[in-house]
Structures are given as structure tokens and as C-alpha cells.
Amino acid sequence: MAQTTDRRRQAGSKARADLLDAALAVIREKGYTATTVDDICQRAGRTKGSFFHHFEGKEALAVAAADHWSETTAALFRAAPYHAHADPLDRLIAYVDFRRAILAGAPPEFTCLVGTMVQETYATHDEIRAACARSILGHAHTLEADIEAAIAARGLRPDWTAASLARHTQAVIQGAFILAKATGGPEPAAESIDHLRRYITLLFEHRPPREDQA
Image (tube, rainbow, N blue to C red; front, side, top):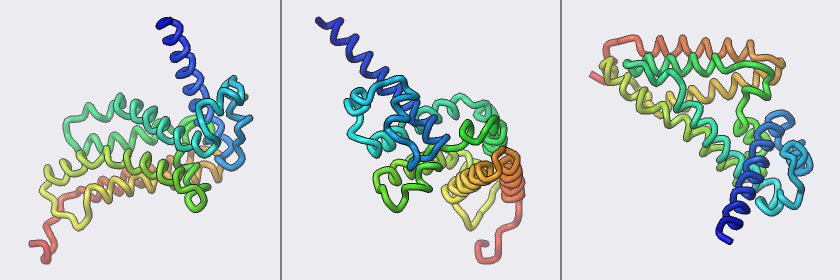
């Protein structure tokens, strides 16, 4: 009996994961509004009965998909090579380089699920908007320690915060994704991220403090 229960639990977990993975793919291709429950089920190879066993509806799926996206991308970034640099500014610059390097394929393959969803739903679906904010700002937060360390290492006294720069990196990257969608390719996105790299490099050039900070 216990083994049967375990098998059923594993099968249920697999079905839910299949539906979430399908949501990540289809919503990035079609957008949230154009995506239907039938689209998700067809891509996942699951029935609508299975869908509604795991999710109350499309909005509940979207919230879960945003959290699933955060977990999936967090694993990617934790394993990324930019962490190997000893200097915190080098880590930050290498993070930007990594973001540029993964601009590959068609826009649905490299653009952001939560960035796509929040543009469509921010004024109409509060739970989805909040889930997207958690994902985007949560990822930005992972950069703050390196930014703070880079500020300290260079003896800077900026009139901006590590948190604000971390959020700015995400604003540029999300904007770059919009350009990629508008043009159908990664080239304008890569240009924007190149400018972000230049901006961060210039920002950390050592300058004496302003008179009002002395």
C-alpha cells in the first residue's frame, strides 16, 4: 500500500512539473493572454482533468509558473562561472557577460517568463504581478552582496545603493528582452547589455568623494 501511494505521489509530482514546464515554454512563445489551458495541456501531454487537479485555473498556474521559473533560473545562476572570480567587481562584470552569452536562439528561448507575464497582467491580476515582482526583485537581490563588496573594495562613497544598481541591471536586461521581441532577434539585446557593462565599469572608476560627502 505504501509503495502504491508513493508511486501515485511521484506520478502526481511529475504531472505537475510537466504542466509547469509547458507553461514556461508556451507563455514565452505566445504571451499570457493568448495562452489557453488547452495549449498547456497539449504541450505537456496531459489532460485537462490533470490540469485542474493541480491548479484551480490559468491564473493559479501562472503564479506557480513564476515560482517555478525562479527556482529553475536560480539553479542556472548558482552554477554559472561568474562566481569563480575573486574580485567582486569582476564577478559583477562576469555576471553581465553571462547574461549576454545566454542570448541564443529565438526570443522565446532566452527571454524572461516573468517579464513577459507582468507586462500583460500588472493592472489586472495582482497575484501574478506580485509573483513576477518576487522573481525579478529576488534575482536582483542576489547581486547586492557583490555590489556592496565592490563598493567597499574600491573605497567608494556613492550616492546610490547596491540595491538600486542591482534593480537597474534587471531593468536594462528586461528592456533588452523587449527590443529582442520587437526585432525578432538577440542583436539589440546584446547591444543593450554591452552598454550596461560599460556603465558599470565607469561607475566603479575611483573618484574622490563629493564635497558634500567629505
